[in-house]
Image (cartoon, rainbow, N blue to C red):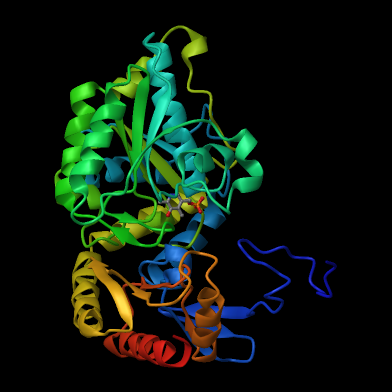
Length: 420
Ligand SMILES: *Cc1c(COP(=O)(O)O)cnc(C)c1O
């Protein structure tokens, strides 16, 4: 098909033949986005899960402005700067204990690529032939070739399948079937080539906001530890208060060997990511032999302006952000509760500040016809919601008010009336 569109811009995860008009946003403030024709849209998904304290938070904006006038880019090989040093030091104070080093990159996907390379580099450098990655069914870790390899296979990556590497996969720990997951992990870890297990702690995001309890996370870590398999926590989405605690691993008292943080790292203001690791992994690369160097970089590694935004974000976490998380989680629980008895919905769930419901529909799955219809319905109500197929989830910035959330849930109920 040829396109009648005027714009040359190709948008992400967008079928332009079915969705020709992009909503033009000119301004963001707190939980709201404003269109060119001055409509006010409530951002109910934190602009793809990144905006934690609200759009254009003044403390972060000021930090960006000040840093941009001082030093806005510097090669990070052989050089360093205060924003990066301070962010790294502060992160190690806040992250689960046992993590000792911080590697910067630019996106969630690259932080996961770095994690996989750290894991394989570790085994390679200590001379142990372990190369297999263990993954969980329905996982999402990014859209680069390496992260697609460790994520769920399906319509998203069918065309690229010949490029993807083999992994061992364990089932999602659905309620009542947790033991099958643990048994599968135990079996996979027994394979002598098992190198690392990568998992999204407590919530599988893009896979459909699937939730499982801290007790399972704790058990999975114990199993990996017993076989020496590295445990990689992909907290790109679950970090920064989303699950109710700063990081999801805290709730299971789990110290991962490697952890990935991005999305809310700058409060959702600029792209930045980090991969944290234990000293053993760094030490396996620390050598007089240059061939053991960790060979990874990107042009903008630890960009000073992005690091200054992250530093400002970390300051906000020392000044009341946790209280706002608790308050949003409580409001979310109050508003989602009535849906548990509503026959139009199933699998009504909440972890921390994230809620999700599955609208009963004849077709489920990401490509379900109901998805775009729901999205269009919410758009007409001036709400930014982006259902995953028939799964409607709410993941607001922490500055959202009770009135904002009430408006969102009222629309979800109305959508079910109109579309189910
Ligand atoms: C969003 C996401 C990623 C990828 O992050 P990008 O910044 O979009 O590359 C990786 N892992 C998880 C769990 C995510 O939710």
